[in-house]
Image 1 (cartoon, rainbow, N blue to C red):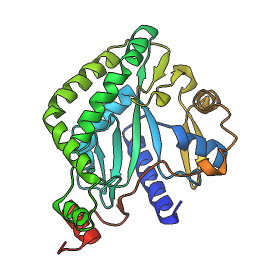
Image 2: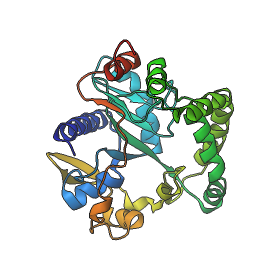
Image 3: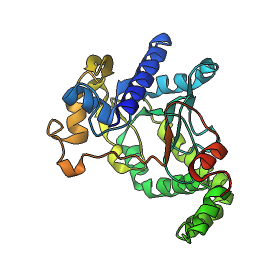
Length: 287
């Protein structure tokens, strides 16, 4: 991973931890971040993002505190923000810019925050059965926000590239259904949030691979592990958590699989650009 990106992510993580400490919020390093702390004592060399879990109560409190970041270098975004369509929140750097895929909304360098919710077998199985509906609703909602700027359209046409046209048509067809999709998403999320306190927790995800069920007592108060030049919180029984999710987590994947899972259509770690400025920077003012 690029050293500048690595340093920027660590600075962002440090700011997030300070915010959690200030407001007495519980978090745990998640997925590759937890694995990196245990196996590498820092970032996995081919990883390029930070993930954390938060108990639902702390997650909701975090969202309620977003205005306290006004006037700072950081912000919290979720699906209440225009153009943002994911089911989890992000802690972002206001002084940077990322567009992951052509047509997507811009945001700052980010840290992903996944809520941990109660799980029970009855409603959990129901949610897994209707997972395909949830996926479609998120696809409609998310793709309805994608768009191409006039500069991008002209650039593609000038190069006689027409493969983007079906995508552009698809995104525009979906726009009128955005509200209906959001209503459906909220109903399914309502089922999820109605589950009473149990000894099982999970992050319900449209990618079923992330919908892994954990014992709540594996998380506990968490313990501190070294992560580059930081100390971060991981689940108290991180061994069971990582084995449940990864299996033999101490064995790195084959070299052919050691690559980032993220796209970077545009990235600048030092400035927040408008979409117009990005298009002019990428394609020129007179395209």
